[in-house]
Image (cartoon, rainbow, N blue to C red; front, side, top):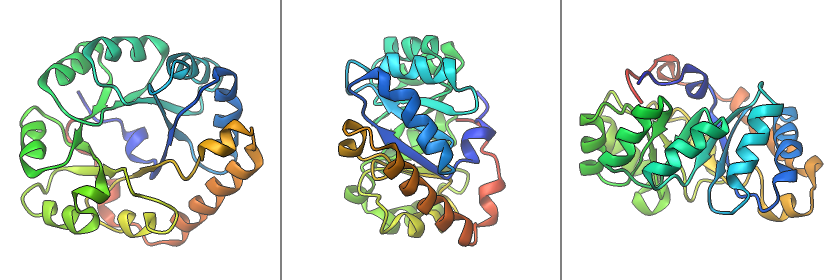
Length: 222
């Protein structure tokens, strides 16, 4: 399954937990207004699937995906809802097979070199390093760059407003994921202005930073 060039061109991917699907479209609009096009709506709540469906149906300009996909049947459900990609906190052959059957871009979660190697041997070239901080963060990603030169990562877990730029400066990182762009308290308060401001600030920092040339290189498979 070819990796999505759209996804690989989005350096900021908010990790979102929604408890009310009515908040999905306003939130996506707020992020888009701040320059953030991609969003990972997790399946950690009952509203997750319906939230994906609404954003996919009402905002085709947004790149909406599913997060916390842990079972093969969920892969089918998120594809039917309109998700353009799927993230998992871990990796398994069953999830990989389900993603191929559904023809959806899938970024498995990895934490160790053995997991990276196993996923790469199944054709994955874009992966989620999770939990990034616990796995070793920037030092771990630097260590992985040598033996896995063809793999690109989206670190999530411990990535925040204070350190995301350091992660994005690494040549084997194509994006960062985090909840700081759409804090749960701001979502519950429907403070879309605050979320737009957070997205705009992060987007401006990305624009100011020098992006490694490898960001334009497309992994063979996802």
